[in-house]
Length: 288
Image 1: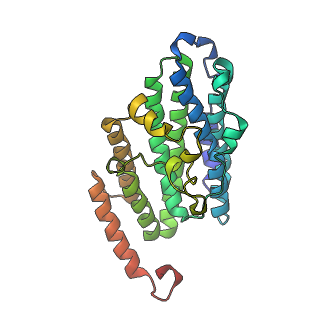
Image 2: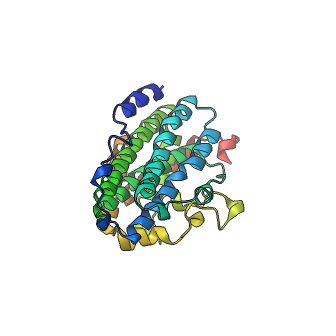
Image 3: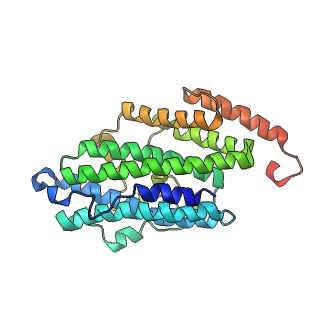
């Protein structure tokens, strides 16, 4: 089991909201209305770890190890929402999200292939780590800069934990796991070619609720995410390249094969798809 080791590892570096956040360093003249509004939106999107955890527990009923790890991930992700709300409660209470606004992002996700979902969230942690690093640079108020740094470090550690479970999946499922990870890896590393950044926040997860079937669509301002990325924290091509490089680097480690471009990873994905198709029994359910 990975859970006991991951618990010790993450427990040893867990920060305390009262002791490790420099609340006394707050400088009110360095926090604008525009900046406070983005903190509110980040608090709401972090709250969406609640429906994501419900999805993980539902779809991984046969995996008690991973499900136990969700207790750590869920706790730390909800803590992210809480510390952002605590910041607003202390310094901009008029901007704090309401319970109704938080509850709006809790809805049921459709079942999805567990291996692809695992890879999707692994890539999401990488992307969020970079988003929060950039947010920390963009903000001018010292306390919120420190908070975003803490959050970005947590997201990096979560990505590392997901990677451990991905390695375990490859040892269990071989080509099937590699194929699922490569498929999603190509998608998530190709964000520069899409109209919007790809992250679990803005992916469609419930067909019956379309168009209100993304976390982003249920925010008080659904257009906020793109504006935050493009106009505020300026998550430009240089930063997007950093995300792609991290995904490719980790895919190289995971597959024990070097990928320097998305095209190389996509070529490998096609090879795996051929191998997977050749190894399937035409009469088996997986071949359908």
